[in-house]
Image (cartoon, rainbow, N blue to C red):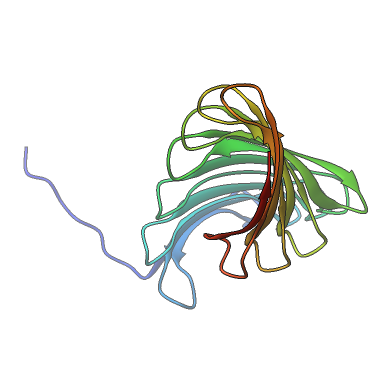
Length: 187
């Protein structure tokens, strides 16, 4: 059987009343998408691919507010997020680009401020985020299992560390502006 190809810039599937219920095409910036619309013409689900390879699915309620998303970013991270009736993300779960699991929970004013994840070495951490989405406090376990509290500046650079060393002795350390060199340490 010979295959035939149909080409178009956009396809629409309509119901018996002529209302568009499904659309396949390219967005204004030439990214492919697939949308499903309700009987009133509102987009209720949309799948799309970006030029960098990121892909995502967004699901909206009957008021047009996105209430759930599932996506894969070009850096390899993946996420599943849920929003409230105002479209604000209230919970987010996923994998970071390093494949470490993450969980975010909205705790105040619609901003994700409390997140749990595994650090690069595979140990659990909890972060507290400011209103800009920058982590400011990170509590977790070091690679050897010792508890560590890290305080970060507005740019996300670690400036102070309090914790237990691998021999269970307590320590406090202040870091230089670059966040890599100790400026003062007390054990």
